[in-house]
Each structure stands twice: as structure tokens, then as C-alpha cells.
Image (cartoon, rainbow, N blue to C red; front, side, top):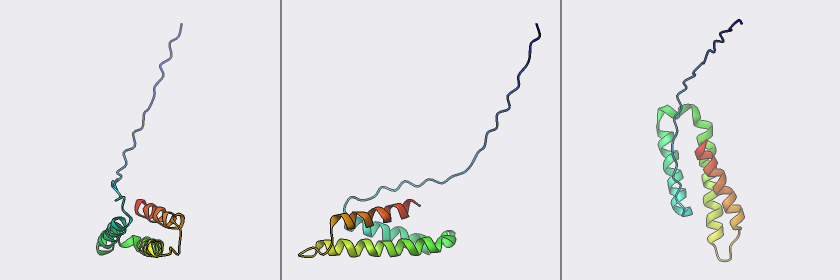
Length: 97
């Protein structure tokens, strides 16, 4: 009997990836302050200069969230929690991106 030797070549690819853990505040007012702080820190850093368009979008979406949250707090409310929560989700996804 002939024995065959089978060689396996395993390739290991090492990639560096920076993961940040974002622990979002539950209170909407605190979250807006938190998001503005992250935006201000990233906008002030030269490291994130290439992300200027995304940072601009983030700032715009934070403004929309703030406006919808304020409109929800008026008496009578001029918007719904569904709209506010949709804006919140958009800002959270912007921050994750």
C-alpha cells in the first residue's frame, strides 16, 4: 500500500482593528450631551480629519434628535416618540460607524 502524505498550509492573517465600546446613556438629554462630546472630540483631532463628511452628518443628526426630543416635550407634543426614537437610532448608528 502506498501512503500519501497530505500537507496542509494554514495561512494566518493578522489584522489590526480598533474597537471602541460605547456605553450609551439611557436618558435622552444625557445621550445628546454624550454624542455632542464625542463629536467635539473627534472634530478637534487631526486623526479623524478624513471623516469630516461623516462628522458633519453626525452633527446634523444630533441636531435633528435634539429638535425631535424638544418637540416631544412641548405641551401638547408636536411630534411622537416613534419619530424621536428613530432619530435616536440614527445617531447611535452614526456613532457606531
